[in-house]
Image 1: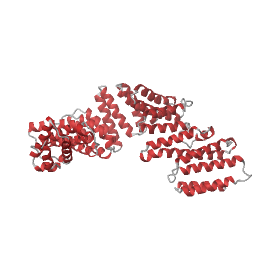
Image 2 (image 1 turned 60 degrees about the horizontal axis):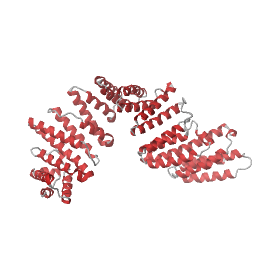
Image 3 (image 1 turned 90 degrees about the vertical axis):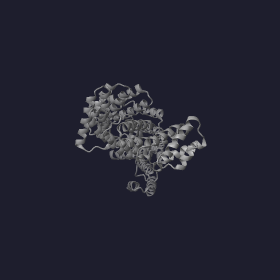
Image 4 (image 1 turned 90 degrees about the horizontal axis):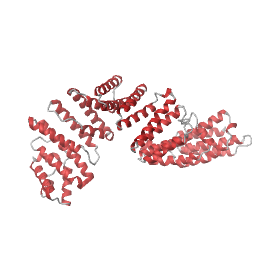
Length: 547
């Protein structure tokens, strides 16, 4: 009939992103329904009104219109009409069609609420939209809610309110509104209290997801015992259905609990959770999870003093994965770092550390924020340099890694400033003892890199970091006295200019005045080519020497 044809054409135009034409067809469909004669029963007319409202709401969620609030507002009218609709008098095909359209509309609204996060990380907007949708859904009558429980909707036995609250909770966590997120996770469980003991796979997966969220928030809030209890609830939920024992969600709960137990110093219990989590990842061909959990297992074994087992586990996992496929750098790195830390033979340590540094350089160029902290920690824990060909090669790789890191390093303090100064000092002593010019140049390069890190600290903290910055420039100049300028010297000029501006605004006194003067004199005493390579002008140094 005409109404059905108009609805189908409206749906087609909506899918083609021509929402305006789609709305015109829906207006015509509504007019036709209003004029239906006595040959149609009241339920049939009401059903068609519902169809029109459902399609209109769905079209409003189309990106071309994007009127989320208007789409949600239509739910009120739709809810009222559905409540007046005698579902028991509908035919099977009519009921199935109504249910399909209802679920499709609701999913469209939910996806539109989540789209700001998916498209641009706008979590605040997502929270606002989910709040509007939650308010509307909380007022829906049983008829509407019953229609949402079908094979057409994800999590068919999950209360829609619980699903929405969970999604809002994750968005709130991203905004660091942890207490509000925790309240939503708990409200999601409360809304499902009648079905929490169900053996349905949907319910088990959902309970595990919510308990994982609760556990993560409680962990962040340092409420460790409560977090441990939440993770345990998530793990134990699957005990009601043995065939779900290999669920990836169960493995995630086990892994989260293992990480928390490790943090609490309960290493054997952490290991007991990691073993099944690793087997589940292996059974489900989850390579990324398999690799990361294997690295975590090695850490737990190390804490228990079982270093040989830890090394063997890492080497076997790495070898097995490399046989099957080429590993991505992010997948290989955790294992390589672990193998380097556990290996005893110098040559094996050298090979693995070289590989780690090359992989880190690659990852720092692509995802600096994801690898910056781990790189800083690794570099801070590296052993002292060795006076050998391999030792010099490693120091060069370390310098290259740090240079890549500096390209995207944010302003602020970094422990690498002191780490690099110490390393420069150690390398200088090796160079002096063995009269090795290559090591002397490396030592100077590390001083330059430390100065560049300190300049980033100065840019954030200003006067508080000025003395440290001056000291770095003084040490760098000292390292340059008898060596060829390293490539890392480039870019030091801006820091000297900012020191000059600072001391002219607030003239130094006492020992600090002497140190600034000494720093300027030492740079002036260097061959002009070195200052030129650093980008430091003689005029700027002469201004500083006045102090």
